[in-house]
Image (cartoon, rainbow over the protein chains, first blue to last red):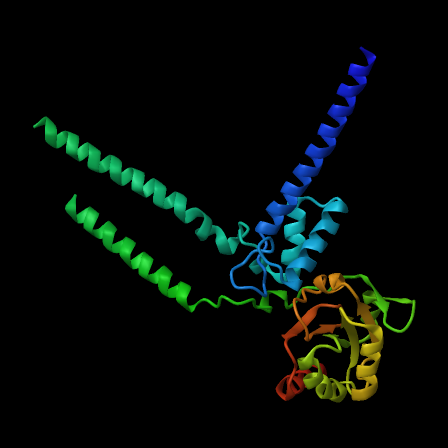
Length: 126
Length: 170
């Protein structure tokens, strides 16, 4: 019985250890994918094997192990290279329109459809 | 109703045309204009020919400092070297030797002359990321408060020398 308990404990420890490693790798990859390789043509850091991409990956890893979170890493790099290095532009005064337009169009589209539907239904009644 | 749909369609088409034409005019290459006015990082850099380190905060002693990222293997760095030597008469220059071999770097300096007041080394290129460097040569002009006044990507030329001298003499 004791042997089974020890076996299960070891198994659980391994599971926790490897799931931590996997989630860490997942976060790293997520960050790499949202960083633009400045020296490449439309590639992310994740897709590029350039010297610049490798150095940025290494710096990202350092920053994560220093305790920075994803947002802080983006902030750190955009301070150095501007927002151009980010594939997802942050919500700022300059980008308000960019972020709000899809929602504005969605609402206008919805209203237009509703309007047309109402007209069609009214028309069918007669 | 038809009028509303027609006017909405026209507005939408106009909007798409404007957005696309603006998009065509937008530069799709990395630009350093956003970095002007931002401070350089306060970090320690290892010196090339010594075990000592150098604090970037020490640059506050100078009214202006030029920080040049270079390497012996970089051909454009050779091209700009004479301009750096020209600028070294009027300005303090910190050289950051980027991903280079110490012996080759020293040979380069011995052959072409030393425009640098200090030469730091960045063996793995990570420290240069703190300065927003993505390739060499790159040159940053900073003021007393360590704020970036100008950032040059690629080799500097005669025109850049004139502009830098104009900035520091004003």
